Each structure stands twice: as C-alpha cells, then as structure tokens.
Amino acid sequence: DGQTSAFYLQRVSIENTSELNNSQATELSAATGAMVHSFDGKIFFSDYANGKLEKWSISEDNEATLEGSLSLTELVFQGNIAFDNSSSAYVGGISTDIIIFNPETMQKTGKIDVSSVSKIGDTTNFPASGTVINAEPVSEIIIRDNYLFIAHMPMEDVANFTPADE
Image (tube, rainbow, N blue to C red; front, side):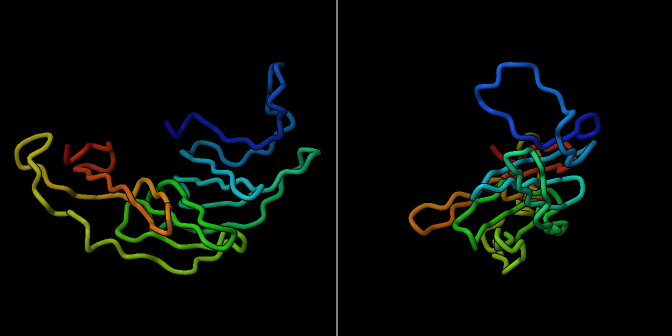
C-alpha cells in the first residue's frame, strides 16, 4: 500500500535456498511505492512517492553505492522505463510528456510531447454515463525496430486508478 513496505538492495545468489533477511542490505526507501529496473549492470530504483529515480551499483561484497539521482516530479507517478542504449532511455507517467534521459550520466536530455494523441477531456461513458478521461498516463514504453511504442492508460480518477475507457 506504499505505507507498510520498504525497499532494500542486496546481492543474493539465485542458488541461495536459505532464509534471507535485511541485515546486510541497504535500505533504499521506506513507506513508498516503487519499481526496480536493471540495465547495464546497474539497478534503477523509481520511488513514486518522492518522484525520484536513483541509479545504484552493488559490489561482489554487497556494498551498495548510489551513483546518481534524477527528479521526475513532473511525471507525478512514473511508468516503466525503456532503455534504448547506455546514453538514452525514456520514462512516462501521469503527464503528456515522456522524459528522455541519459542512464549513464543521470541527466535529462529532452522530452517528447504526446498531447497530440491524448484523449484527455473526451467523454467515454465508461464505466458510467458521463465519464470523462481526466488523465492518460504513459504506463509502458517499448522500443522496437527504431520505433517508440507507448501505452496510454485512460483514467477517470487518478487517486483510485479508475479506468475511463474499455
């Protein structure tokens, strides 16, 4: 629920069948909602509550190091990251912009305005008569054959993730 969870980073072998605990782990964030991505040997931690994306490395000795941070508060609630290469990645959210950033330097390098394909304000009459699309987050991004595909999630109510279209 984002209030009774915490996120930890530690190195564990996939052959490990013993019980794990967090005594040797690095706490990344408590009481939040988050998503984790792995790319180019690094861990990218999206902390929704703080609108922050962090890049971490972890050594063979289980030493975690924060290598960079990026504020994504303009996205309100981040979607999945699509990594194109070591210098280009994309992330959307509850916004009509997709943020382009460099995963190596953790710097924003641009944005893509997707408002021209947005249906915000359209009446859909789903799930009830008179329902209007009030937000249309970019929840997923896929890169294939040099094309960027995005998934819009039309919503009536952002707080409860109430859909506004079938």
